[in-house]
Image (tube, rainbow, N blue to C red; front, side, top):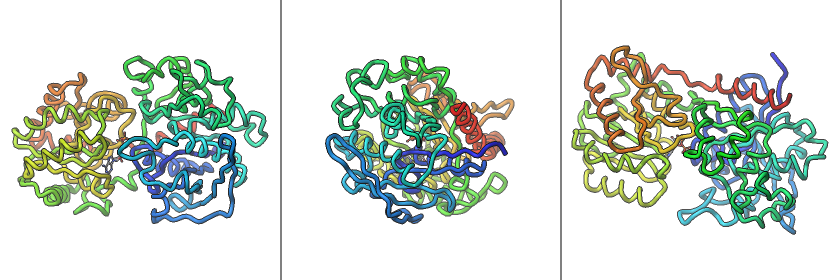
Length: 485
Ligand code: ADP
């Protein structure tokens, strides 16, 4: 084997300790694949309130770090545990900052002290490295909550011997979330005002944690090759496209993987009956169970569509709302698990009230139900406005729930259009963001559903598609080495 790397992966959420979306899945599963490749990989995250409830457990290390915040000093207490029984994970504890539920904000908006909370976290990460005597070759940062780490290393810590050989990689999981704060937060962070420039951390007169990383990280990645291209354009760039174009040669797209230890209908403890591509009979039991859970009145051959999603406009929810009546008119059924924007929540609850026989709705976040829905449904819809990678469509493949997706970002990269002649392909795609185009894709999907041999082949293609982490982990390692050159 080539040289073993010392890698610290930093994220604000890591499955199964804390999860609000795909970032947690990635931060929980990429380390396993890196470990498999023989590297010394460790993970660090804040000790959120939910972390304590995780059955994997943790213990106090008897260590603490002291972090300057504005004119004061705040303490972080360290805890540790293991991911997958072998990967050290560290938790930075501070009751006032992190003992909260939910982790980023409430229904009424983001927590007002989010800048301070994640300044504290970013700086703690560097101090923890020294405290636990881990000198990483690479710190792999993820999303804006970790965005100041590269900037600290290029400023306050630039002469720190502990980090002389440490390089940073920053992964963008969603450019729409930027961590933009008033400029006075630079003082909270202890960073010099000299970096508050258009070439530095300034972003439309705000101090942007995301831009900090885009400017200062040694290499940048995002979670699919198509999204890597899209974010360099005005249409998808959220006003960061200029910075990203400047860093174009340092920006790489690596499609996320799937953790098949967690997402596999053959061994999934959450589903009514296990099944596989070779023995599919369990899938029907799962469909019946799902219909039961939501009290749907459907037959075995009623096409059952689903969504498991954050309810935000990004996910194309508006298109689904536009076509739902027509879909039900085709004698189909629909199940939704999601939470988010109350306008969408209310709409789906209303539909559930009007058509309880055909529309099942659960508002909330429910990991077990997510598995049951993928196992029980025939189709998964993801008509996103934009989608950095998207994991749910790849999980759906494994569960034989055929994805109907908009051809953007990672959806474009992971789903191949099914061709009835060659019988190749894994799902149905459309491009223009209109209800009509979504509906055309839905109709194509339903006509294949009605042709038994085509449906058998399509779902076999889906269930045998391989999106394991090994491929992606190897690509990350190549980039870690490139950063170290
Ligand atoms: P994003 O990160 O943009 O939310 P992804 O498709 O990349 O979208 O990842 C979403 C992850 O969150 C998947 O694991 C999905 O199953 C899960 N998820 C989303 N909404 C819910 C929910 N309401 N309940 C349970 N799991 C959910």
